Amino acid sequence: DAGITQSPRHKVTETGTPVTLRCHQTENHRYMYWYRQDPGHGLRLIHYSYGVKDTDKGEVSDGYSVSRSKTEDFLLTLESATSSQTSVYFCAISDKGQDIQYFGAGTRLSVL
Amino acid sequence: QKEVEQDPGPLSVPEGAIVSLNCTYSNSAFQYFMWYRQYSRKGPELLMYTYSSGNKEDGRFTAQVDKSSKYISLFIRDSQPSDSATYLCAMVAGGGNKLTFGTGTQLKVEL
Image (tube, rainbow over all chains, first blue to last red; front, side, top):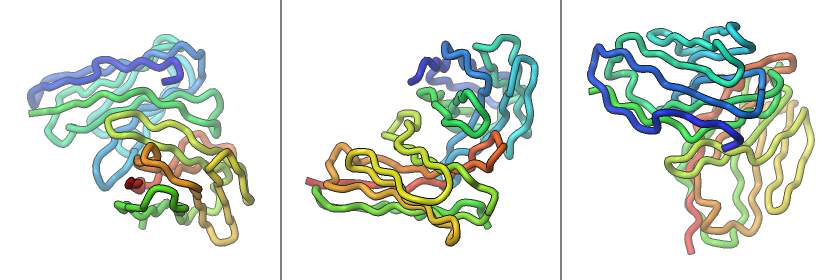
């Protein structure tokens, strides 16, 4: 998976609890992305980062926040998880904006 | 209307068949086009990457882009059971930094 590690790989949590997902890369790529994947919707961008401390929203950013304090780590936080955030979350990296994106193995999150 | 449209399938073909997978799009600014393959419970992996119009071949796979029709295709020759997966098209505008994905086509190649 192109030097990308997502943790945890599976998580079950309860509505209202905070959740943080981690993406770690060893490729020194500038761009990092968080997507969610749901049946019928495909991959949808939540947030992305174009450098340390530089982040921007994607198309489904409500209820999510991100942080990038180091080139290699990009964190996705659900401040107060809801059942609609049950999904598979993928991290991706790329060297340039229009370049190929490489994906991690995903995190399966269930919010009960 | 979605920016990128892709038939979700499922598409079932016999082993050895030629498979054609397609996407249409509405944003004329898209210049870079990709096809990803995703096996069940795995992350997407890049299959093909093309810039602007034309064809690109890699082994059994051929990617075709027709910008005038806003239509891209992926052809798989001599399909194998190991090709059974979901295929996602993706595209990005020149100077852009966000991919727009199709919803994926599920392909099953049967023995």
